[in-house]
Amino acid sequence: MSVTRRGMLARGAALLGTGATLGGCQRILETGPVSDVVYSLDGFTRDAQRLVTDRRALAPEYALSQRSPVFRANGSRTVDTPEYRRMLANGFADYRLRIGGLVRRPFELTLRDLMNLPARTQVTKHDCVEGWSAIGAWTGTPLKLLLDMAGLDRGRARYVLFRCADNYGDTPYYETIDLVEAFHPQTIMAWRMNGEMLPERHGAPLRLRVERQLGYKHAKFVTGIEAIADFASIAGGKGGYWEDSARYAWWAGI
Image (cartoon, rainbow, N blue to C red; front, side):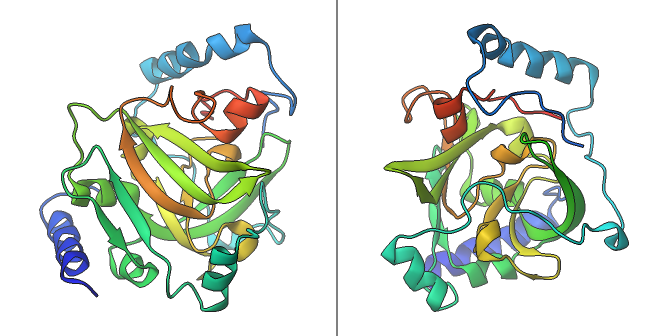
C-alpha cells in the first residue's frame, strides 16, 4: 500500500472515531421518453418531498430471512472492455477507485483498502422502474466516510458523480446524486452482496447503493467518484445515462 493510501485509511479510521456518522416498484416512468412537463417537475418533486420528510429518514430494512430467493440484475450484466476482463480474471487485484473533483485530498483506494475501512451491512429492497422488486443484503463502505476522507469542498460541491466501467454502445455509463443522498447513512459503496463478494452481473467490484432512490440510480462497475458543482456539461447534461437517453427523472426518490 502506498504512503498516500495508508494515510487516507488512517484518516478514515480517525474520522470514524471523532464522530463521522455511519449510520414494490411503482412505474413512475415508462421505459420510453417522458414528457417535458414531467421532467420539469423533477426538482419540485424532490424539494416537496424533503419539506415533509426527514432528510435522514431511513429506507426500510429487513431480516436476512426475508431476502429474495432470486435477485434479478438490472442494467449492464457485464463489461466487455479488455481492462475490465483482465481485472475480473485476477480478482480485481489491479482495481483502483479514484476519488477526486472538488475535494482537498484526491486519492485512490484498492478494493482491499475499501474492505479494510469501516463498513455497513443493510438488508433493503431494490425497486426497479421496470416494475419488479427484490430484497438483498449489501455490505460496503459508507460514501460519507470517503467524502470526509477526501475533504469535500462544501462551498462549491453540490453533487457526486459516479464514473463506471460499462458502456452503452459508445456512451460511458455515469450517474449523479446530490449531497443529501451522498451523506445519508444508508448510502454505501457496496462490495459484498448476500454474504459473498459482489457478482459481476450486479456490478463487481463496486456499486452504489442509494436506498431511497429507484434502481437505475444505483450505479454499477464504479471506477471513480467525483464531487462536482453541476452536471450540465457532462454527457447529455441531465445527470445520468438514463436521464440523458430515455428522459428518466433525475430525482428518483421513493
